[in-house]
Structures are given as C-alpha cells and as structure tokens.
Length: 295
Image (cartoon, rainbow, N blue to C red):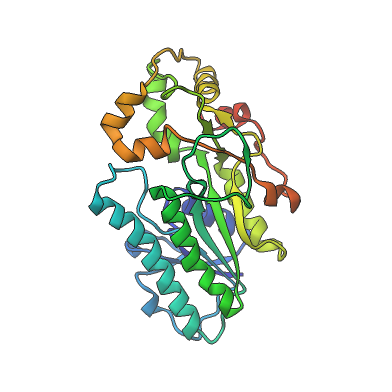
C-alpha cells in the first residue's frame, strides 16, 4: 500500500514506519524536519508538495506537540491544541481536493477523552467525556478528523493509553529514578494506569487497516490495566529495585500544576473493547511481560 503519515518521526510513528517498511509498504512522511528522514521513506515538509493526483490508500495522523513535556500554561495549551487541530484540518482540506481519496484515515487521540473523574468502573469506547483540558483536546481533535467520514473515508480514532516501549514514551522519564532505587507510587496510588506495549499499539493500528469493520473510536490500551501502586511495584520488580519513595500529591501539583493533576493523579480503567471484539490478540497481555521486555 501507499501510506501518508504525519508524526512519523515520533516515538509511536517511528515504530509504525519500521513495521510498515518491513511489510514492503511505501511511505510518505509529513515532517517539519524532512532532512532527518532517510530513504526508502519519502519526506515532505508540507501538504502543498503533494499532488492532487497522488494516491494514498491509508493516511495516519499522529502529529502533535508532546502533551507531557512542559507545564500547561496558556501558551503551551495553545501549542498542544494547534499542533493537532491545524494539521488535521489541513489533511481534510487536502482530501477534499484530491482526485483519489484514501480509503482510511487513522487519527491519533488519547484516553484523556474519558476525563478525570475518579472511578473504578470499566471504561470502553461508548463511555463519556468531561470538560477537563485533556478531554476537550481529544474531543476537538476527533471532531476535526471525523470530517473525513463525510468524504466517504472510513475513520478510526486511536485513543492511546500509556505507551511502554524502549527509548521513549512514559518510561523514559520514569526509569532514571527507579533505576536508582528512588521510585515509588504517585499520589495515593489507587488511580488507574491504562497502559499498552508499543508493539501492541502498532498492532492495533495495523489491525484497523486490515479490518474494514473497525471505525470510530478504538481504545489503544491493554486488556489488563493496573492501579499506580501495582505499576510501581511491578516496575521495581522488573528492575530489581526498591520502590519506597512515594511522590506526594501536593508535590505533583506544585511541580506540574494542571498537567500533573490530569495525567498523573487521575486515571481510568480503560479496556480495548472494540479491538478485542474484532479479534485482535495482544502480544503483551500482562504488565509484567511488557516491562520485562522493555527494561
């Protein structure tokens, strides 16, 4: 197939491109730094470099300012919003002009869609949202992407959880203190962490490509989420390190503000109902197996 990918140089995008190249697909990546992309991948700096005659079977939109890199002041929030919405709207405009529309758009999203209210209930793709920043971000990003449906393009929205993989993602920030034996639970430790191994997230994206019956929201999470306390102990066991230094809730709020409250102190028990019902088989079903592979 021919694929157009945005965010192809990021943590998830790089792994996805590697897998697609291994399956002999042809890839064009839209990137702000096209000089960093090496053949056989073709790079473009903007959509104007593409022709209306170009044919893409699938478009995968993963572009966006990292959500957890900086404290959320007003300027950073605008950057996080704009980097996602503007790229998505530009893709929709490109589709409208294209003579050959893609069959499928796979668009990024996150389990932040489901909001921050604490609950132990199982959350699936039918669950609701709230007015938190992360939920509003996901709602508007998804709404922009769903404009593709009116053009006859099947659209999947991958609501990604905490992605565990080598050389990036959430673990890249957690590992240094844990390796020194300075890790511990975050806050009260009972908040849910809906994680997924990078290989399975890529696997679900490919499963969406190969299964025409999948559309709309698709949770990119493991079928076995855990609470933070369990995640902490499991990571410590995998590293053979103690986990006796908790990070109090007040410290998280002081250091990270709203970002820390929404991303670290709240969490939902999110299940990948659609992927499981469609027959996707997870490579890493348990947190133990995933962490042993990564660390």
